[in-house]
Length: 220
Image (cartoon, rainbow, N blue to C red):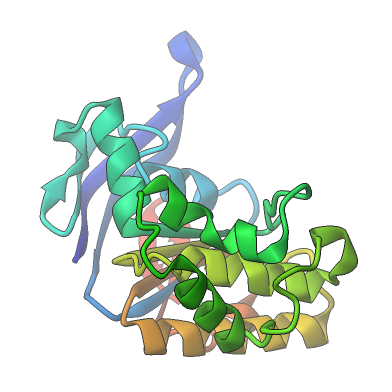
C-alpha cells in the first residue's frame, strides 16, 4: 500500500547535509507501523516526503501504486486530500470553528457533503466526543483536542494515516488514552497507520516498530 525504495533527502544547498539516506519501507494495507528515533534524525522529514509536502532528491515513494514523483503539485494536493489523514503534535484544530466543523473539513474540501452531519457525528461518537460537537476548541482539554484531530484525520476514510508525535503535548495518562484510541480507530477504519515518535511507550501498540538512524531504518 505504501512503498519507499532507496529514498534520499538533503538540505542546505552547496553545503548540503544528508537527512535521509537510502530509506526503504513497505507498509501493508491495514498495518500500523511506528518509527522511533531521536529529535533531529529526520522523522518529520520522512512524513513530509510520504505526504508529498516535500520531494525526495532520489528514490521512489508510491501510495496505492501511485508514484508521488510523477505527480505535479495539484496532483499531490488531491492525493493528500483523498488518501491521507494527518494527526500532529500541535493538534492544528482551527480555533474559530466548532468541533463538528473542524472534523467536517476534509469532507468539505472533497465536496462530500451528502450526509456530512451523520458522518461527522459518527466520528465524534467514536472518539468519545459526541456531546461536544457545538463546542469551540478553547473549551476542550489537550486530550480532547487530539481526539478531534483523530476524528478529522479519519472522517474521509483515508488509505493512510500519518501521525507526527501525536502525544508530545500530552501528560502520560492522557497520552496513553490517545494512543489506545488511535490504535482502535485505525483497526475500525481499516486504514494503515504510520506513527513517528521519540516515545517508545507511544510506539509499543504498533504492529511493527522501526528505528530511524543516520544509516537508515532498522528494527527497534
